[in-house]
Image 1 (cartoon, helix red, strand yellow):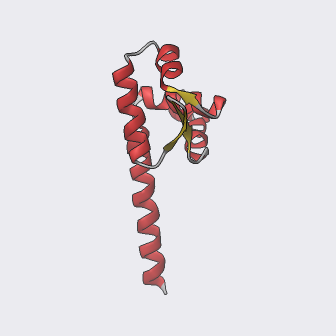
Image 2 (tube, rainbow, N blue to C red):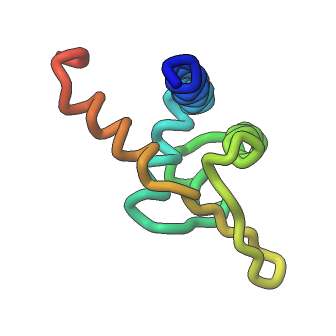
Amino acid sequence: MATEQVMDDEKRIDKAAYVLKAVAHPLRIKIIQMLNDNKELNVSTIYKNLNAEQSLISHHLINMRDKGILDIRRSGKNIYYFLVDTAVAEVIDCIYKSKILN
């Protein structure tokens, strides 16, 4: 039984590291915050609000989608991104509230 618990803990630790690596970029954190505040946004809105190149924002969006942090909803020619789970935004919020940033 203890061995199973250790294996489960290792999987959770690996998943946590995977998610933290996936969001460990200032633009990605900003995108997550925007999506958390707005529920879903299209690429144009995101890159205009962040004053960044569309190709760069698209790269980050695709990367986070591939890693299961974001997903999309299509509406005609538009693609809207949204957070799969707002827990990622909650983790970022916890970091902001911690003494790490002070």
